[in-house]
Image (cartoon, rainbow, N blue to C red; front, side, top):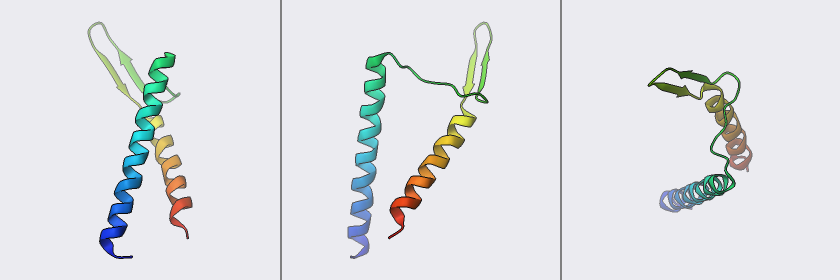
Length: 75
């Protein structure tokens, strides 16, 4: 397999993952699930100001994606 084929496969799989994620988010919005906050996420709400930084959510997603990529990249 040459480099161009490998890049094409990566782009196809990446596109399919993005489409699946989009459909998942669309389905959640139709069910009324707008989002979630984990304990440890930074959420500050003032009178006219709201700040939300999902630090724990980002760490958790990073760990999950790393595990998935490690499973699929081992041959």
